[in-house]
Length: 120
Image (cartoon, rainbow, N blue to C red; front, side, top):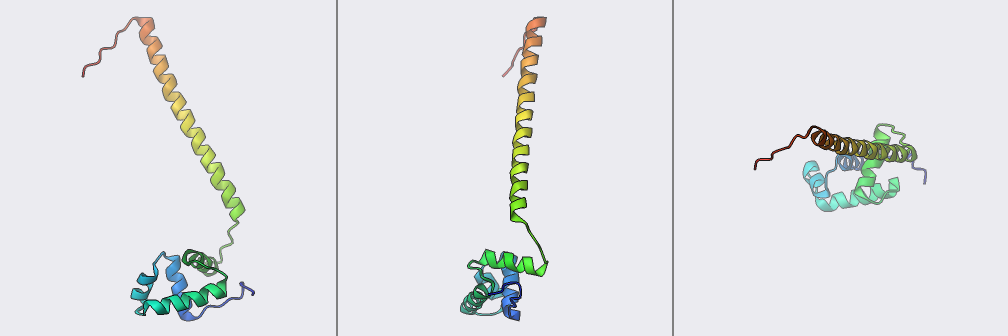
């Protein structure tokens, strides 16, 4: 089945749009003023037409078609990994700077013979 030319009916398109917004089946039924069972039937038809099997997949499919998104998930994955590693490096540097600052303070206290008094 050619998914690029897949067309949904008006109602299936509405449901796919609501799925993209994160609505649950019950919320879709309430919003569209239709029965819960009708939503299930329309979702099954939309799943078959789009090659999806879950509500969130259908929503993603709809967003991709509605906004002509061309997401390269391999590049997205690389970017997420790179940002995670960068965050770890920044955290480690911040932690090391704090440790070094405390160590330098302790050495100044020892060199100058200053006693710190802690009051509780």
